[in-house]
Image (tube, rainbow, N blue to C red; front, side):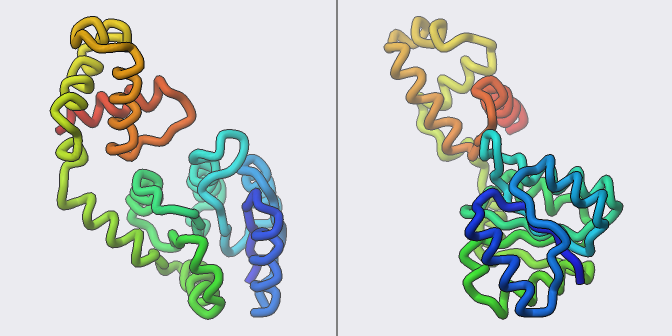
Length: 213
């Protein structure tokens, strides 16, 4: 089996490569960015890509977006995603395609060599390998509306955001400080699990969540 690895942390990248070598799995290329991943995938046509979710330059979703693009460039390319935390939005995007050959593991699983290698082989073979913690959080997400976690004031702020009001306008409408509005909006983003590369993008996504409730 030949794999490519995309992980910006040099030590972890080297560690995964050595671990795979000990199991007779060849690493065709090991890179540190999403752009490099796309290049080596097209060059080597590997049987599996092991990809970190967060990579340069913003360390948000570059790895995942590159992995999804790689599956387009090499039709059906098996992808095993590694993440420090459960990124629910990203996990759903990766897993919602319905095709096999996908995996989502927390990085701590790499420490369990047997479990990790089994996941590598299973995903490369067209199966799936989903971390139990990811499954638990996605199931919990399916049972509840994230808007239910907002306080009354946070819901009020989000409603005004949906009307197109700026932070300054919201502060004036609610007769609170600009800083208070920013704090409420930060709480809204956190509770809705919105992590993105720009404030404006998160604002739009929050409003779409509100409108789609």
